[in-house]
Image 1 (tube, rainbow, N blue to C red):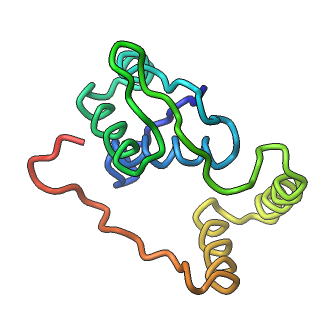
Image 2 (cartoon, one colour; image 1 turned 135 degrees about the vertical axis):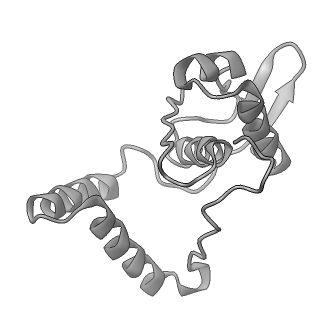
Image 3 (tube, rainbow, N blue to C red; image 1 turned 180 degrees about the vertical axis):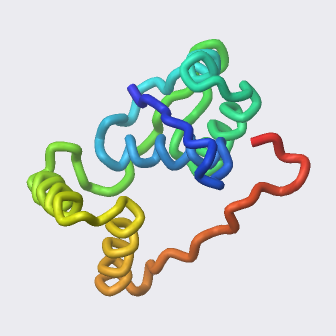
Length: 141
């Protein structure tokens, strides 16, 4: 099960946060094909977001082919992403590195910037191009 955490100060639309967190859970193996996503009502109760926002996120995940809605049953994961299980030895090394970075006084944003710079060095063809931090006018998410 995925436990959504919405950061209303992030500048990232709420539905995008739900999409990103669902993808992360799938990528880490926390959600596998056949697993049921929480109902919109459960997400609303846990996060106090608008039900339409949750449905928008689930429609986006469905459009990407990651989940499928089954009438009267819920929304289910269709496929996996990546190959980085939550218990990977690489995750343990990254945990240690992040702890050392924090102990050395780096802020979260500093660590993210450093990690992103290293990623772009090793994966230049997939360099991140951040989307605008605002949502289109009229979009309540």
